[in-house]
Image 1 (cartoon, one colour):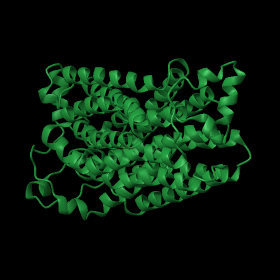
Image 2: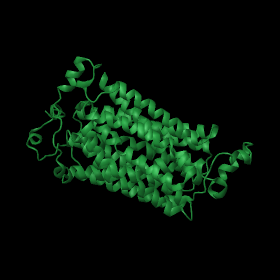
Image 3: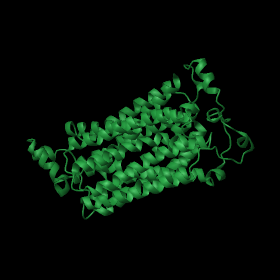
Image 4: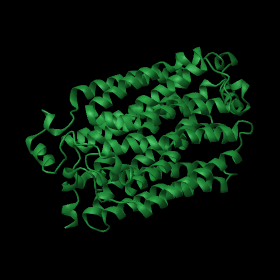
Length: 464
């Protein structure tokens, strides 16, 4: 069925885009000049134990960046990401999700290919490239929601969203393992070049085979087109009710829960390779394996949660809103608890890896919590609301790495990291309780008369 193909292609594009985003988190381990940083001594010793000479260790370009400079590079992406998310929602609504997604793939791929050159030319130029890449990728999430809203039918919403958003765990598993292998074989520069070529290839596939909605797709069957169109949709170019959106408690509950989710996610995505390699003392190949495993487990959680959520709703075991709250509890509650436990079992590297794995894996429940809730509270405005969410969550993306850099710049120890994990857990619990108290799955009232009369047939049939 074409709607499943579209969701799968969204997943493939997401794998590419997210890999372009997070690759630096792993490559930076190899980019930093190890001999000038005592925290990398264990890795150098491991290479020597494998009979690699000092000449081979220093053959590839490396840079004299301290801990704060590394965290600044990792956080720079999210400065731009926060700025363009709301305009990205508006843009995706004007030109469509497909065109927006193709633009992200091409532009982000080009900027990623420039990273090795920028790093060697000037540190501040590298920061600018990362900020520009963040500006480009700020359009990704709103474009994805805008496109999927045209293809997803209500009683398959959790399932199809889970397919599309499987990109996150797959990108972690794919990117970290690929990066560790390429860094070991050819050098960290090639990780950026290969991903850039991959992004152009995926963009070409999108241009040829993906369409904005079923009515524009010449390959979809008439039966499936009529079936998707049987679910009422809003007319195009409907005015955006900005005031109603920004004064809705349901929207703000989504924003706060998503802010907490993103804060945890970015910390684990960008910092886990460094934590496992530097603090826990695992070598580069083991680090690649240990950071790929949570992605594979999260993929299982994502797919299982989507099927379970739709099953619970259709069988009326829980109401729609309580189903979303249940999965929000599983997302933020479990991950926050695991982050707290890391500090409790600080003397065990094995326990730390287990808790990090469970924390990241449990974030997979988000595809059945806040993500589909965007379409439920405001039909026709999902791209705009997704843009608002990602824009307001943007500061959390760079605040976390910058805080960690401040904690560890002079004393990079397990204790400093455990403080950061505890702060992150507290933010996660705040987001969870906010959504449990104020979250809604009822379509919000809007100022436009036509919108006020509009009712999706989505879960109406389920509730009857």
